[in-house]
Image (cartoon, rainbow, N blue to C red; front, side, top):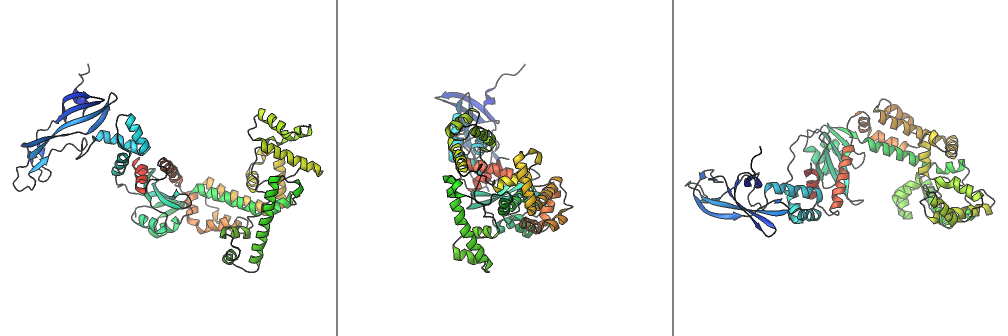
Length: 518
């Protein structure tokens, strides 16, 4: 048979309940300590001589939806040791129950800390008010900062990456323990010296997973010269895909010649396309001027000074990455084009009527895109053409060329076959990227040296040179069990916390909420 409920069960351990009173919307519980003696904090001698009494009023966990205030009758004791410099001392309680000068019990302090970690200042204060544990937003943040404990675990495998305080302007660095799957610390910037100094203070680290950019490779080499560096596999896959997209961009002029779409008739363009075409002509003039200066032996720096264009633009022109006539994107009409052509041939020439029919069938686009398509068809018919063909964008072509042939429509398969027949360098680049990604997926680096030799002179030579400069880290990425995916996940958490605080949190508070939550 269960025992009777005792009033002492309402309060923390070590106290005796004297009385419980209901005052307004609060409960006042009068307590006194079970211990009859006090211990001097200086000499450690116990004393029974009471000098006076006073009342402490800490808050405790709510009871029945009402706030609880503890009235603790604390005592002051005389210290009888002659050589002790303290004559009077106050009664202290168990630190796991109530610390010195505390205005909340430790069990309430724990709840406040968790609210601060999860919600931050103002949202946490609003939620605490509803829980009958009123606390200000500043107090919540103070508790979060105060309860951050120093990590004493020895680090062996870490991941390091940067994150943005303000994207494109200021960045910091996050370090994670990959073995325990926890963040370790945040650094105020991504400068090489800052990372090197932190790494040098942790000589036990043997493996560091990192991104291929940001200068972390050099910082690791200086701070931990014996540590094994591992490049992030996801970024290697993304960088290789980007390299193939750049190769397609470089080959766009050859692709247009191959598909017979290298001449544009301005009469067949819509108003929006005419604006794009005029911009293309201006870009062509700029490209020709920059290429002429380069052929005359002018350096990139001098070209930038003479023309006033950015260094990035000049580099793109000289690398052949600025040749698109139309900056096309995948359209919501692509899946509807066969149906629209059939309806057009059947005599449905009203764009608004076509759009309403398509909308009833589930089309989610706007009327303007259908009107633009109809206008292009009319212009093509006036010029006695079946339609104005447009070469897909480089991104679409890259997707088509790297997709399985069985998953392509007939027109897409024909387009890919024509490109493969007329642009063999692009086929070689696709083969090189496919072999590189296969090595990452199979976690085998046995063919990496042969791959570097075969792919060095092609359209992806820039990517190959980057892999060769970071060869050891890339090789480790293919064979090691470690990667930087955990760190990327912690950065996603960090972004969520930062946005909860409207981007105004200082580094110590970000670190307290990110590291303290673990």
